[in-house]
Length: 234
Image 1 (tube, rainbow, N blue to C red):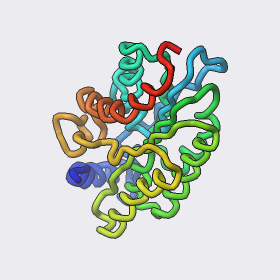
Image 2 (image 1 turned 90 degrees about the vertical axis):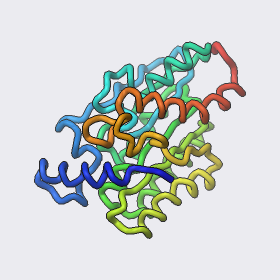
Image 3 (image 1 turned 180 degrees about the vertical axis):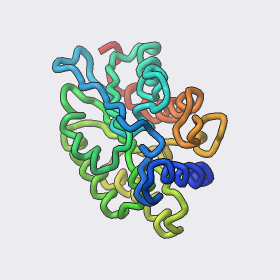
Image 4 (image 1 turned 45 degrees about the horizontal axis):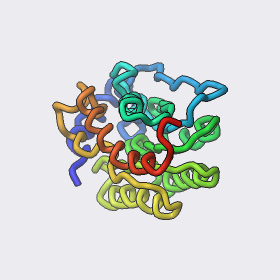
């Protein structure tokens, strides 16, 4: 499967030098601003059922105007096609699976129908134990499913510098969590974007506006059949 290989290997050493920390301890936030952009808290009362994107800077849309982030593009598609949902961008730059788990209750506030989980990239960049990441993702997905929320789990790839065994276990963990909880599964959030210079910003990691549109189409293919089974213009 094509993925992030070359761009991560270039970006990580640059980030480590710039911040004065070892490469293995740097997160995806190493190429981000010192003060990460946090997702706006959802309103206390929602007029429409929600689709929540729980993720890191790839979800937040680092380096892009808010309206060009993947969740915003999904909102525009929903509006254009007559689906009455509110999309919540709960992406926090630099977040790990553990951070996402801590934010789960907050993310599921209100009338949430669908949770899209995009986490794990920073776990992989830091070389955190796969068992730990898998446990966090399982608690996130399982917790949402237990509340009657439909979950779309997106996979991520680890950089190659931790060895083939880590890379293989990392990739497999996402599918195993999805299977365990009968969640919908998108094998790679950055499919068709990772490693393609024309679809990424200057850091080689975060998608540009065109890359975000590619990802939006990937997510929509998983999301639209779910919505089609429900009510339109709710």
